[in-house]
Amino acid sequence: MARQPCDGCGKQVSIAGGIANLWTLEKDTTGGIELELADGTEHFLCFECIERLPDDHDVTADDVAALSE
Image 1 (cartoon, rainbow, N blue to C red):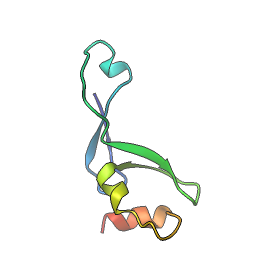
Image 2: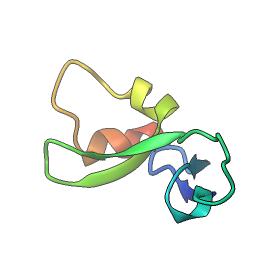
Image 3: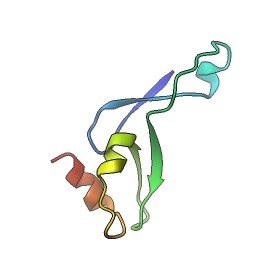
């Protein structure tokens, strides 16, 4: 199972699937997703950080940076 740090909180997040799980039949789930934001930047965020993003305007890299504060 691969892991990647969340761009919001820095926590290591599991990424299920791909070649790592091909032969092991593991049933682990992915803990985040890569998002393309309104300003064109891309960020990998865990689901907890995604829930903390503002919903009153288009999300930008500044909003992702604010998650670590």
